[in-house]
Length: 508
Ligand code: HEC
Ligand code: HEC
Image (cartoon, rainbow, N blue to C red; front, side, top):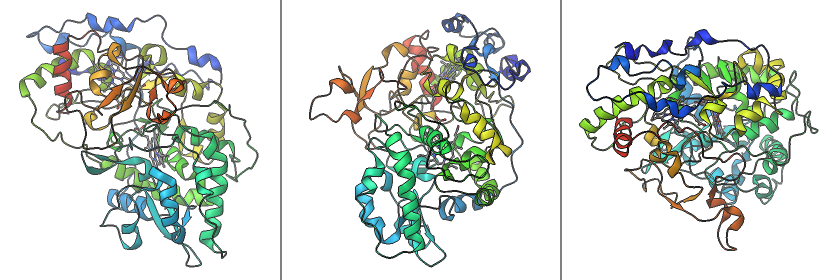
């Protein structure tokens, strides 16, 4: 069992707290000269006792285990109710206009509705809340499920990151096609605000590829238009952002929340995460008083997130192959991703931040946050949100967190930028396609062998797309922010070992 005592491996002790690190240098403060293929040196000897399996000098030894804070005392049932009824996003589209806006806004305003929601909420997609405003007018406002629920195998899964949303057009221009309300009402006013905010955030956050999400860019843009002390909206940004900013992201499944000490791919949100979570409402929240109310009731939202159970793999599993896979996993993966034996008291998740140079996946997100956009950290720390949540973009170095892998088969595509369509390819970096497109966006069309979305490999990228070929369906990994390299820890495995690990991943 010594093998499973892994939390000490590269554990929290190494926190050489590199003080406030407000410099570009921090990007380079990663472990020097580590050849990650060294991970393959450990033997996967069949009957060897597990003790010898995790190599203490494996790549995980360069990680930093982020400490986890005690959970907040919230109520998960109230949390879900809150997400589906409250006005934490307080601007949106008047009820009367919503049916007109829906077809114009595409995947932003489509999606299944939940019959068990009360009143008019049962009539709108799961990602929207119907709010009654003070003068009795009604507003339809986006909620967190707009990006944090998705269909898988034909079923809507709350908390699964949306993998089929199309953020490749300018929502602002599309909203302008919605006719203005004739009469002046609270809902009309909230609509004007919605449009005003999208005028700023929309054009600047257009994604290149369907299935990638602009949330990180959105946060950068919105914060640059707010006074950190009062949260007042500023028409002129306090920080100019580069025109070519491109940070495609992918919402991770919420069933990770119960294990994670940090949030976001780069592990930047530490401790109590409510401060970064309610950034999503920063679209319309213009005063500290409003933000404080939301913060209070988000105690329950956090409890809801932490209550979500990962789904069970729906088909038969080859137990023998999975057992063989568990051994391979233990030697090659556990040091970073943790151990998943529910019957084993040694089950652990190390919350391991891995230096950028070592993980080698696309650097843009982590490097932006730490480098030229580091003003965000200062903004955040001096703001109301920063009194609640600590932002550690460079703490103790810049990198990405090895996420929990519970039911990871359900959350394709993979990596923080959604650049890899199947789990099989996560484990074989040389086989990843440079240009690929999903065969369709039908969630029942899933590749149960490779574990991911069926895709077609292309011989050209977006710039070579034919005149009639939709560019936005091509995932072009040569574009900034879209790189699919790195994480080559599976490359040393034999095809049999890889198949065994995939089988094992179905069991956790
Ligand atoms: C526009 C789409 C969008 C909306 C709306 C949105 N999110 Fe997210 N969310 C994302 C994306 C994308 C990420 C992943 C960012 C990254 O790469 O780290 C994310 C990350 C998160 C995470 C961190 C998960 C983890 O494991 O690191 C939490 C928690 C979260 N969101 C909660 C919320 C809540 C609560 C709301 C509503 C108040 C919300 N989100 C609204 C897109 C969205
Ligand atoms: C040195 C630490 C480390 C090792 C070893 C490691 N991983 Fe990872 N893994 C990471 C990090 C960090 C990420 C996040 C990369 C990103 O999104 O840019 C990741 C991402 C993944 C993902 C994608 C998760 C998602 O939801 O997108 C899978 C699947 C995965 N790893 C499986 C494995 C398996 C299986 C092994 C063993 C063969 C392994 N990893 C070995 C650190 C590691």
